[in-house]
Length: 356
Image (tube, rainbow, N blue to C red; front, side, top):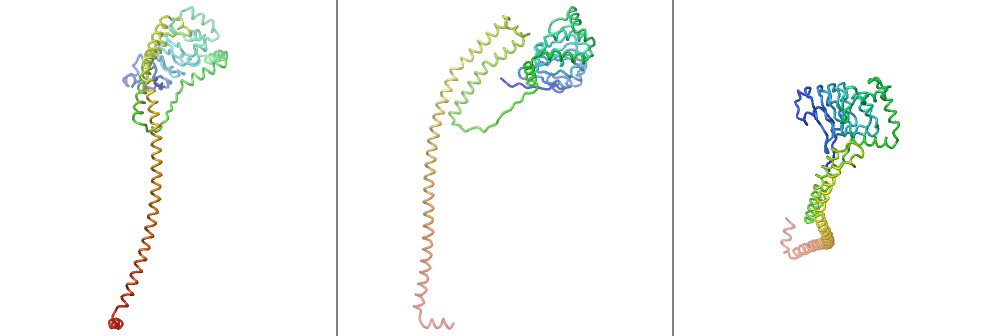
């Protein structure tokens, strides 16, 4: 599957993704930016600061750990944070500063598991709230929450809220805390590294077989990538709490159909992949034999070349010695000829030569 990209929610990113008019962002009333399996929002920053008239915001299926920055949306009435990574009630206290917030969805966030009593806590401290996690907030529930948290009368009493959170967090065991920290850390940043290696030179037949094998494996992976995507979508659609899917007949029926389709697609490719692997193994063995023969020929050629080189050096040395002997012989011949000429010259001519 393709790797997940975490993005930071900036105004430029929102305008580009949704095709908004930069000059009219202050008039936008509704935004829907759900995440998907390729791209999720990991950080809000100040990207929503200029959307001052926003009434409805959908940030579901993202990887938000902190929602600091939403408190600027004073006109917000509906907020969907379904399926994010919000770890505790401390992170959602910024929502207490939204006086008109009526609809809030925090399902499938870690805080639902770490603090099972978060619903009455939010109902008590968010007076304007009318619907929480898909269920209406009734008067009886609000009265019960008021009695339960009577010591938290003022919504602006931040220190009291922090004391409550510390009390609840102290009840969690060390194992859950470690899991929660790892969960948040894994969603804050993802580091992807890749290594670049120089490709090896391979025989053409082997390369073609490897290409066929890669295509067959990619085809096999593609055959179950789409069903797996559908499986994830169905889980997002049906899961509303722990262990609820075990009794959902509709969900189980669709899962069985998708898994059967994946099995059929994969089985249909096994024979082709197996044949190509066997062919590649034979070609690898053939390539190894050829490589050994080639190395033997190269070693023999190198040995012959060294022998010829030695013979050439000996021939050159003999040639130099013969040239030296030839020069000596020519000098000796010239000397003998000069002496012979002197002995045969007439006396008069010699006297004339001496006189001259």
